[in-house]
Picture (spheres, rainbow, N blue to C red):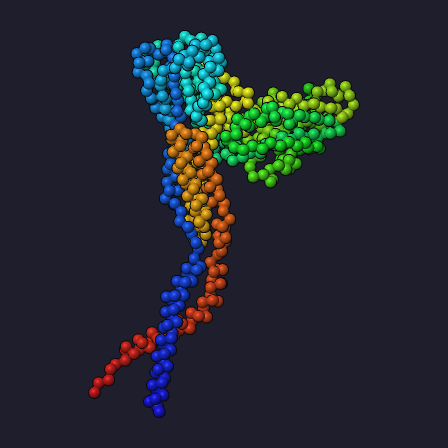
Length: 555
């Protein structure tokens, strides 16, 4: 009986050991991998190597320039060498990680018959009208006509002319180095019409180091898919002034043609409003000598905040908002003038704030108060007002007056207030700005995802990243090929995709899930199961080790 009981006990011990080993094997070989797989953070693959390579991207901005020579513009020996192509390339010296090179590809050729006839006309305006071709030139391209050194097409003291479209005129020279001399003149004109250091510095102002060079360039608006423009009439004293303004007609006649010409850079929406009892929030200074009130230059920044709270236009807007305010001062503070830093009255009686908008003070004629009782009817001169607002609008979009070379005649803008090559220059700047923004966004996203391993990377986020990288590369290739329109569209797609990936809400789901919360969840689940298994394994190990060390019996 004793032997049978001992055998049964040994069998139970063996069965217990096998059960413990089986549970341990199931927990380790099946449970742990299954738990690890079901609780792991899903992270789709991203092109980290391509994103890191974007910082070393070299932008080559190619400007196609067609140079047309008339018969007596260069010596006959040089005319026989036509046609041929000359490339002028230089690096833009900016303190930025992305190297930018400007490449002017000049294709020299002889003038056609109709071009010879047009360039022999009496004035450059007549020549431009005759040279208008049925098909428009491609965005970013230029055509330079080289005329005779003694041609009357330009004033005798002028060496070149920049037209409202993508054309220019340069005087030739009868010299053995004619091509070199004319080539330098052409590059100067082409730079003024396309790419300069100032234009690119303004576009990359947010990405350049904080220094004086970039601080002065932070006036233009950042690139966006759309913009909202609000015209507001501020009448703080409706008891004294009955102000009327034809804003609809003014927008239709002056603003809308300008925005239509600028439509390639984004979508625009325009609205207007009238605000009563809206004060500037700054007490003007009274000058007894002139019986006028003045706003000093150092007080102008304090004017915007009190007024902005009444506008209410930027709170629900998805796009940047430009505010243009026409302020009719109250009777107690009339007339009101704005002074510059030297204390002289500003000619336009207006000022603008970078990336915000502009304010114009409109004084009521003092004779109107003697003619009738209060409130005085005020008819706003919208021509004078829109001249100021359009000039401010150009500055806010970075469309500044070009730096023309010496002895260069600059044509006035077209009826819509924007020259064609000014739009091209804006698209160049916006393309470079978009590429820099998209590159910075993707680099920041890659660094963030590399440092924090528990952020979920969904497939749609990864697809947006891949799409942004491909768009950056495509835009850079199109810029190098001189295809400005397609390069700008690709750069917009790069910004949109990169920001959509960076601000995706799924990236924040597990970002604030610390490790102590993980232990608080998993310990009550695994500890009751793990302790018996571990103790059984330790006991089996100790008994097995003891049996190995037991000495064998010898007779």
